[in-house]
Length: 220
Image (cartoon, rainbow, N blue to C red; front, side, top):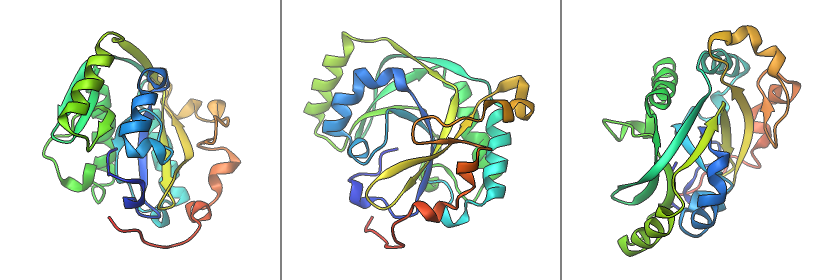
């Protein structure tokens, strides 16, 4: 999720992220310096879908559908062996990519009105952004520093719904990936993790607008 400076995010925007906690010690320092989304509260992650539905449209029904859809996907361990680049992004490349692509495709198929990155790209490449909008020399420096500390592996066992207030992103709900056990095990896994509520817990029942300080629109 690389949308530039924190102020460029719009109040009420949402994102679905697969957090990669084990990668944070490796990339956190660089992300704080060179990825504005980190300063806005976004942890190391692989984006599942951004932007998702506007917060005003994320109803209890949408939460329920997300819970069931994501529960059908199995947890996975991804390995980051090296870096890749887009024109304005340096990223860690995960392996395998198939399950991550499947997550994105399944959510986008359910909500075709919210295509990945607003439909800007013909192909969506799973990635973990390390630096964004920096000169190529910065990318070269960061990549060289990371090379000696790779590979790193991360376990992805849930997808988190993040909500922007226009300046900061906050985790609102976490949807566990349960694989073959599917929705039959959702209730057994409901527990709060960090600032997120597991889907199905009392906390997620609050409306998303409750976490928005205002309806102010920010420049993009």
